Image (cartoon, rainbow, N blue to C red):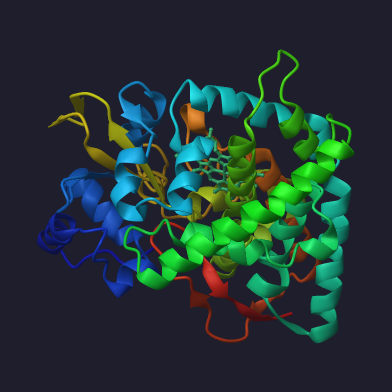
Length: 411
Ligand code: HEM
């Protein structure tokens, strides 16, 4: 159970002062008391910049479900943030930051490319990859759960998914971190410059990869990149620019989020030894456990929308053009939806968490992420049931993407 505030007056004060642009250190360590305070005292909280922060599950779902009233288009928000830049071009071309009809067209092609066969083909390579990583950890006796496992899995999986040659995968992770780092609410010059160079390097690399795949296509039922290039049978295609930016987006979307699912998940299990023991005793619970770990420590804590017209949300009237932050991490601890929400329950059912969002933009890679989480967490636990901390874990210290930079453990 996370610590709550001393009394209702303190909680109310914390809720009213909540500002995403000025978050105290304790929020990064544990944001859930703040989310509870917000939900109880100011669930549709007006931020100092005029936007609103939502912490109730029902309000977050209402926003996700209504793409007409709540837009994902970021051009207006990103223009002043990024200026005329590659970061602007990238973020405003990727499907996640667009509305219908562009979103619908791109989404259909991407969803079509994640064929059941392409995902089923991933299972054995992921098992082999994870087992190899676990062997290396066993040989050392100590390990960093992030570097040695959580971060090593997604880069290979997404690399396999798009059939990026193994020897060319080195820079993918840094590019991806730099581009996502530039999405933080407040951006410094160095983050901006790194993001800019990453978009340039990444798209340049992909231009070559796409040209090669056009020349030598793979099986479109199995090779996601070939399918993305060829589009749908009815003639729906991506332009070259849409193709490159959306591939970058897929690579990015699948990296840090999944790293944090594995890292946050194995850390949460250390904090809940009875749940860890229960999962080890009943490995068939792993599918439910992954959903619960996604809910309990969501790797993507914040979502965003902007109102397209005047709306009333949770009883609060808002004009068109209002920025909304969807508190995914807060909604996932809402007692109105989840009984005893601060308790980790590896068999929780039902578990309609919002870790993957909801509605038209719901994560297109959710089955890839689930597969990685299930294999990495399940096989790690089976192999090293007595793992324990061997040093102080280091948190990433970011509001949007919640996770660790390192978790030293002994096996
Ligand atoms: C634990 C891991 C993951 C988490 C927590 C996660 C979370 C999310 C969330 C919350 C959204 C919705 C964004 C919004 O509505 O504004 C989203 C969208 C998306 N995700 Fe994931 N994701 C994960 C892994 C992946 C993976 C592995 C891939 C690809 C292989 C992926 C691809 C995408 C794509 C393409 C979208 C955009 C969908 C759209 O806008 O229609 N994600 N993800």
